Amino acid sequence: MALVEFKSYQQQAWTRIAWQSLRQLNNELFACLLQPEYTENKYLFERRVHVAKNHFMRAACQLDEVVLTVLNQLYDLMLEYGQIRRRVTDPTIFSLCQSELIDMLQAINKVLMAASKRKINLAIQSIDTSELSASIERFEENYQTVLKITSQEPVVFLLFIFNLKQFCLSCEKY
Image (cartoon, rainbow, N blue to C red; front, side, top):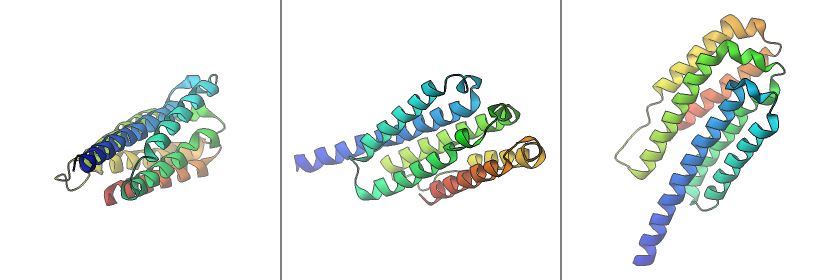
């Protein structure tokens, strides 16, 4: 009986670490978009992204398949929307949507926090993604009015929005 309890506690600990690692990865990806120092210090920022990815992968290796499936899906979507940092050739364009990006960063972190608590406390039935949906909508409005016209690669922002919406849907399903 003690071994079963130990494995259960161990699984919960690794699950918490995995959710924390996802939040850290999200913070590092958005730091690449929000901090103007990214262009001069790409190695430093990319190193931090790499370390966050490794932390997640280390935790993910310890999880059971059910939890791992959900986390892997969110991880993949996060890496996909994080590709915008490489696809945009002029990073100064992010200054035109900085407040929307900050709102999105905070909303995603709240959703990830709620999702991690849901896994620990199954009494929480659903994850509220309304704030994330609203921040994605505000970003999309900015895209339609500003970014689509001023960006050299407007399609990249469409991919970013699509992946964010998929991320939001995956969180809702969870």
